[in-house]
Image 1: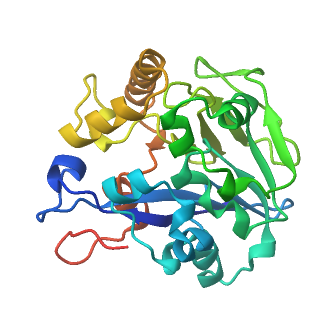
Image 2 (image 1 turned 60 degrees about the vertical axis):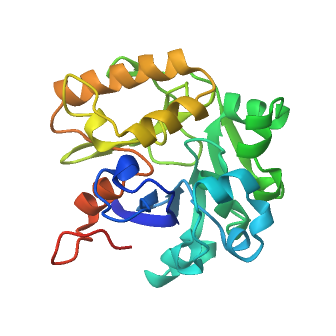
Length: 282
C-alpha cells in the first residue's frame, strides 16, 4: 500500500505563532491533512477530503462565522480532487472515502467523489443529522454531503487496538485499515489507523491540534489552538481523556507515527515540504 500525504485546504486565522507556533506574521497557517492510499485490490482510498471545489466556488456552503474566524483560503489547487489529479489519477479512481468526522473542513470534498463509498462511525452520522445547536448547525453542512451515496456507518465495536476500541473489517477495504473511536471533538469522531511494514500510522483527525501534544508525558499547546479545541469540543471531558490516552500511546510506542489534521509542521515532516529557510509552504 502506497500512502500519499495531501494538504487539502488552508486556513490562516489571525494570531500567527499563537496558533501554529511558527508563523512570523499576523496570520497562522493551518492545513487540512488528508491521506490518499493506493491499495492493491480496492483502488484509491481517501482519508478525509478537506475542502471541495464547490466550497471554493460557492463559499456560502461554508459557515460564515468560521469563514471569517479561520480565514479560509479559497484555493482550488488545494482541493483533494485537484491534488489527486496532479498525481495522475482521476476522481473516479477514488472508490472509498474514510472520514474522521463530518466537520466542514473534513467532508467538503465529498461532492467531488459522488461514486465513492463513505465510511465513518454511525454515531457521527446520527449527530450530524440532528444539528440541535448553533455549533452543530455551523460545523455540519448538509450541502457538502447531502448528495453523497453509499454511506457505511459503523458501531464502535470489534477488536481492541492498543487499548482503544476499534472497528475492524471495514466493508470493501483491506484489513490493515482500522477506524478507531476517539470521541470528544464530536461524539462520532474517529482516528484512522493503518498498519505498515515499518509500523502503525494514525491519522488522529481533530483528537488533538498541535504537534507537541503528543510524544511527551505532558501536553504543550499554543494558546490559540488550546482555545479552539475547547470551543469546538462537544464533550470536552471525553476529548481530554482520549487525548491523554493517545499521549501515553505515543510515548509507549515511539515507532508509531501519529499526526493530526491541521498542524502544518507535522505535514512538513511527513512530506518534506519545507523551503531552504525551513518555512511553511503548500
